[in-house]
Length: 213
Image 1: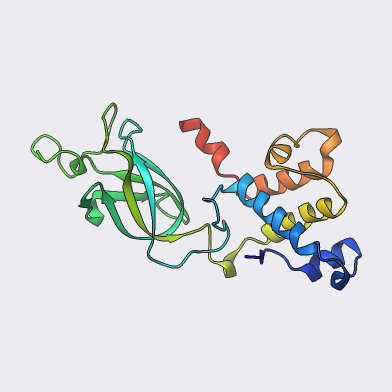
Image 2: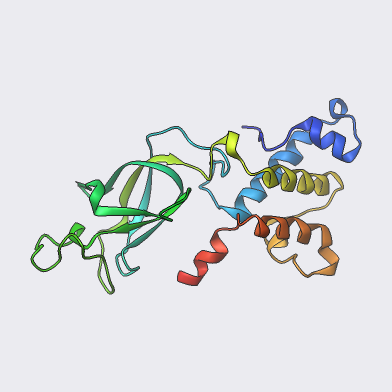
């Protein structure tokens, strides 16, 4: 699906070209949007970071309880069901984080999810370390996914997409790794400015998660 982060007309105006005469314009925009997604939110293949999925989409995650009961999830806007192996969890058995804003990026599981003996681990006990979990792909979360609804997309996403697509129009090859290493590199001033813009908008998620890996 062609990206709607920016339009061919907007890119044509940016580079001073005739949009009707350039069949590559949409390809530049699509490539730029894909890199912007990858360098900031890293959605699953085929997903769009800055648009919401329909409700009821199920995604699967590893159940690894040594991670302090935290399940790192894709950007999530709403949760309708959480299932751990064959057990559907009550909404009181987990908390989505961050608590006061969207999108959610973590699920924090209650200790009672694993242990039936509530005399030992009650509803107010939460996973510590080290514990073993149910295994690979054992957490199934049904909900609405994405950083935001399309109509609430941060304006910086459009600007970054247009700037990167402009570099493609100028026959530059810019990958995710190029952007990540561009800040402070004099030979990649334009790429560094794009990356700095995304950092300042607090859109770069996975660099922060490395602290907890």
